[in-house]
Length: 522
Image (cartoon, rainbow, N blue to C red; front, side, top):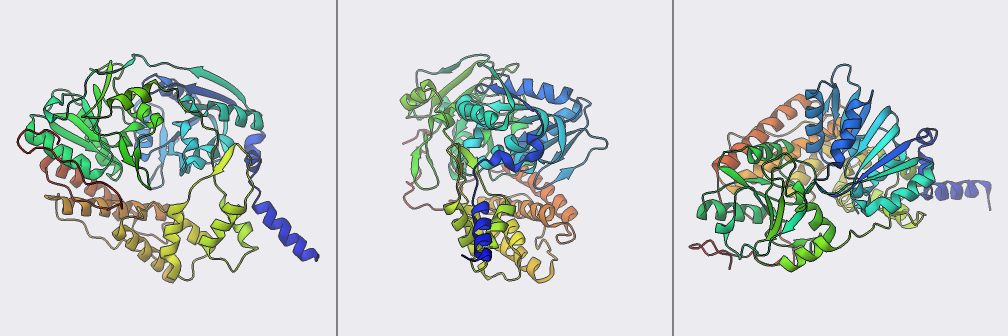
């Protein structure tokens, strides 16, 4: 075999070797880190104690699962007199002389050195899509002390990882301040049985607005709504409105987006259904997710310290069973190749498209039994769309494929394609959006506001990734983004309409109906 062939094979094998990922971070391995795992359910005080160590440290970083939660910690820490900066995919706020940072988990640096790091919702390491971000943080953070907050589903895996990294591990176990109580009865399908402080859990945007319309039509309650595609600023405004005592907005209707972050004064969690679309089919909500959601009921120091949970009409037995089940232990956590590994692999297969390259690497790579390769369907869908865009380097194509876009939203995808074409042609990308004239008075207008905000968020993310010289309208995008978030808040306060179905899934059942006279679910 020729020496060149041997070298090429060695390079390919090295790029596909994802065993021992702890060795990817030699600077972290040079430190003797102390890992403190605050392990317990929701409403047990685990995150509070970790944040106390973060605030008291000379320097610290807080790693959030959500942009919204990073913003909340940024505000809270600065309010205590500790200077703290903010870093998310869409924005950076540098506070003068700040020694602390609140960031989203994907944005944390493995180069900067901190005294204390906090990694929130660490059980997300086992998430099939985003898990690699938490794994990277645990393996790569350069911090003397790392505080992990989460449930005990990943405890065994974390013990193994800490043994591999040589870090000391200390586990603090927590229990809920007050036990969660499952009510004896459902709401029997009547919206009139909704009470102040209720969170009605629904798993689609369409269902949220249907429930809002029914409750506000047949009861005296006013509803706040929270779901994933709402801007963080709007979600926060809705949460604050719901938390205010003695106002008419006393019921929350939200998806499981509330399951992480957002301190809410919830008296009772009411599951409208315990069936949701899992990306392929309608299926029962996993027990671990049911626990996470139901656990948000009751909050120490609020008007509702005791938490209650029930269902709207059916599924009470399933709810009870989920809450009684022990958490299922995660056997593996997520991992994903770095760009450098992909680039090394690509050098051996110059003829492959980006999609085929990614598939070949993920299918041929070697990993040990602690890890799995995270799903990357969104990256593949974006690359399929970018197939006709020429002149993009591997790194640029990789960057566009990571952009935060809803691949089911054709308008948002069209804008991403335009951004990529502009970048490949001139490296100068404009927003291409105009400010809406006012708040929405129907669902079509509301959906348009949502999409515009998503496109602006994507533009800001790309500006961070590719530089403001290439995406120069950052200030305008930030201003328009803030204004649209305000319009969405006004729209929710002033409007109540029947929602449209935005995305149609094959096999998804028709929505259930309620009696227009009694408000009772049929």
